[in-house]
Amino acid sequence: MKKLLVLLMLIVTPVWAAAPFTPEQEQRIKEIIRETLVSNPDILAQAVDAWQQQTAGQQISQAIKQNAKTLYEDPASPRLGASNAKLTLVTFTDYNCPYCKRFDPMLEKIVKQYPDVALVVKLLPFKGESSVSSARVALTTWQQHPDQFWPLHQRLMAKKGFHDNASIAAAQQTTGVKAVAPSEQSMTQLRTNMQLAEQLGVQGTPATLIGDRMLPGAVSYEELETLVKQQLAQAKNG
Image: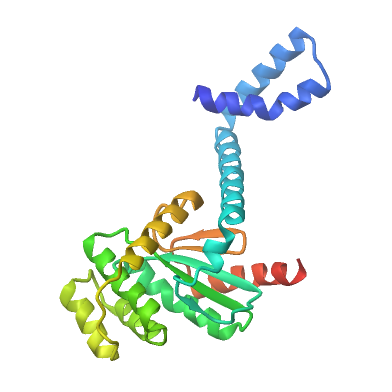
């Protein structure tokens, strides 16, 4: 609580600096602040939320600037859509994540519906050993047989529940994908994805970077489309 009070005092400090008050006036201002907080506790929560959102936004902007090439132009990351897209979405996803399984088809639909939008997939194995195994097989397929990646990706996403070695092999067989042994490069790519996620403040999957906004979790198609339209218009006008 003390830390939050200090934060609130920092918010009003510039006003004091611009127009100095007498000690009595300063004391009265502090009393008014305390009385206001007691009567309206939500004010402090809103101030903290706004500060946290601003801090998160600054962190994301800085991380995008520092990692733009790795985020948007890494040939080791699967990509769908135009190479010269006006807006490129970057999704952090996991084949064992139930929300990712529901949200991923929406992202592909967006790319098909909006020719100026592209999608980059950053596999993020947050949910156990089979998350790593399935991600490595998918990334190796992208590296060695890129034309076969998307059918495999969609099949891996379609399975309910967690993967195991049998389900990964079945996904390859069902889609006619050539069986591959996970490459060392695929493990390197997963490490890179983990580092990117940490810098962007990603704490779970799915997490999708849309322009300068990080969208945590899965939302409805209507919400996704609205945000994409906003960021696409901003990209075209910027």
